[in-house]
Length: 225
Length: 229
Ligand SMILES: Nc1ncnc2c1ncn2[C@@H]1O[C@H](COP(=O)(O)OP(=O)(O)O)[C@@H](O)[C@H]1O
Ligand SMILES: [Mg+2]
Image (cartoon, rainbow over the protein chains, first blue to last red):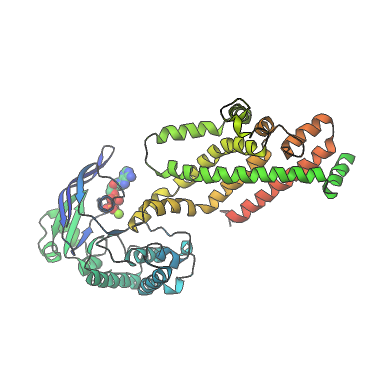
């Protein structure tokens, strides 16, 4: 179980994150939503150990893979990018990498220079690098943000299958209500660095506790996107 | 104009001494550059990306050393390796080795500061990505270097250019000994003083050609395209 206690992150005078408690059980999928600047990425970065919280602690993080909001492609081929995070012999790395690239619709680009990929392709490559080996905890920061409809579906399917196959814990941020509802066991709505709502998708959709959460959800149109 | 003609005469006749001087120069510059980069790249990466005590001080010392006058570096190496100095028994003074040591002292700080400036540009992103992929510190550190290989290669060329053009330190610790430690720059100084301008000019032309080759190499490798199409 992942347990974050009294997390606080400030930049100068500005508090960008303040969470008293957040627990995520093993194998659970927590989806974090909220407007721009509500502290979603900051929370993920702290969980990933990329930045230190100003206050508070995180326990239980191990075997982690994290896909940042901005994907970086290493200056090598797409396949070699993926092989960087694969384990085993060269042959095995290659096989595993090709498999996940295929799943994410990148196999035709395998021998291309990764730096030349489009934003959406780079993002799928970053996801491929994270999924090439099974992990205990998967952190995804807006994994479908640069994807078109088709690619978004591919990503969502891949994630759902991966979760089933590995029973890893997933914490994911998104602006897509469909992606959120598709995979979430629980949804965390954030606003101005704080928790606005936390519950199962049904709870959050049907009976949001705060007025702000209600209006935020009202902005979702579940048919689109 | 006949000085030029004579200079080209030296070049085209492959004058034995001229060729030997070029050989010593290239050997010295090759090893100076190699060692400076082997030391300076990791130092640069560490200063750009690693959190450690005294990082700021290290940065400051490094940028101060960047401006170290070559004759001072020469003097230091001279004092260390002179017969009754701390390393006198090594018998290194007035050899190419001493010249390489002085050059390494001069060039390593330059390589380290230039490469740290390069690596600062993307080490955060690389680190975040590497953490996300579960890579260990060693692999991440290697990525700081390999991901910046193009820019680091031009740092290497800069180092080579410095080393081939340097005169103050190498004349102090090398002694400008004919057939042994005489390099292009010290030969040019000597021949100019003697009034043998054509030999000096021949060496000068070669230095320019090497500089040109380095520049062409650098621009080929960086493959820079103008922003304006
Ligand atoms: N390095 C930083 N320095 C100063 N402010 C930052 C920094 N990183 C993030 N912030 C601020 O923190 C707030 C939350 O950012 P972020 O976690 O990226 O939000 P979200 O991912 O929900 O859009 C924003 O107001 C942002 O401007
Ligand atoms: Mg964000």
